[in-house]
Image (cartoon, rainbow, N blue to C red; front, side, top):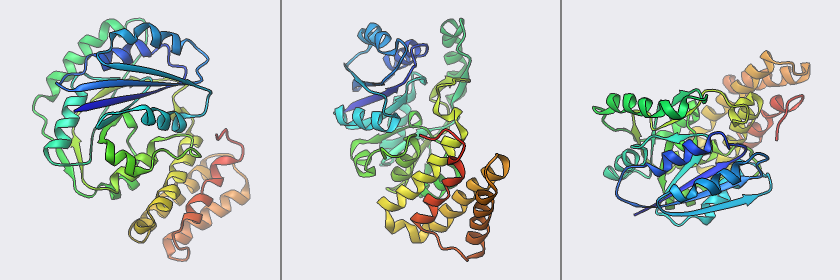
Length: 313
């Protein structure tokens, strides 16, 4: 069995030594390969990768491209991969040593198509983090000895309601990732469309403990732009039903409530035009009153609340 680690990188030179350390110390008896996609970084990310790649126990490929966004970078990394299992990793997340093993065991033991961990640990990336990471790992390991895997038989309902994962959280079979259709290149943040399309395929295994640490603050992290995040969540819902129209009847109303709720709350709290506030409120009420039917067009229209006056890619 081979695991392909796909790491997307944009201006992550500060974090990459620990990211690579996490990859190099993954526990378990399996073949591994490491695909890094540098998405047009303007810092020394590519240089750092070339300096530390020899510490990795497997084939290493570094792909450099013009800045095109994490969705395009993720797709390019997947195209270059050959493993039966796929493990995406964000370029500032450090996998804990047990991450791959517990996720793989959780997934394969019960025949799930994917599995994920919860409760990632934020850390401060200061001058002492490299010295402290060993103590952090030791402390966390002592807390997970008695954890047992959980199961979501029908994860799609929860994923539409919560949208809580990033790719570092999960591992999936290659076939399952292929069936998602990949990241949508027109949606800047790649996370949610993959999560939705995986959840629609079957049951998910849950490892109820942390599998990675991430920087508590990072201006280059995609989640720092709230408007972009919310815009892309709603765009991903529309794209999901475009790919899986068979799920619109069962899950369309739930998705429409979530999308219109996000749009209305954002419009209410931020400086958007009166017309946009009125329109988002009308959609919010109309869906809940049964006056507006869920549709792909409705979901896409909710993204207008996040566009005007905000930096959306």
